[in-house]
Image (cartoon, rainbow, N blue to C red; front, side, top):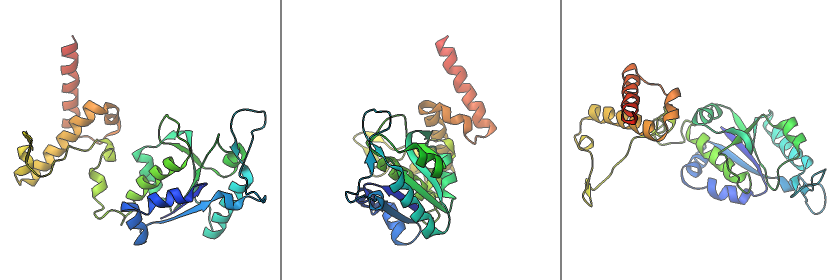
Length: 249
């Protein structure tokens, strides 16, 4: 998979994406990520990429032409237009399901906004989708883009040492991950659940599934609406709901 980031701060993005899992995946060729400096496509001698908005208002907007030239250069190099995403608080909130869908694409082009935003004509002409990482505001689109890159790359075959790892993590399959423990078995009087020390893999598997179900019910019950549950699990959730209502009554 190839991902192209259009940004005013490529060094910042490279610093993050050169480390840990993403850095290793890039070095072994599992993913290809390229950062492009939007300022390189500014056409005046000062390399200016922003200007004041028509109609007045606070702040500055990223101009259309440098972004368009940068995108067109990427498209020409690739020979096709990758799915283009603008990181924006106005976009749909990123979900694990959408991450899985994006990871199946051949390419992604991510536009990182800055200042007060981007000339709307760029979005209308080139952008396929706007994505938000939450209902809050950050300084620019770089941090949201890095979140998206990390989440998507983890789903690409060959990125994780064990491709089954991500299937056990929180939000994959709409359930939160089960609690985890490591040595020592007893820490400051707190014991590890005995089932995890039993060596019985089937019991461990059932315990983890039950814990995931309970944690999701307590912390993020709305996720259960889209979870792949057995009829027994749905009946158990019904009993929990009934018990809660009984206590309220």
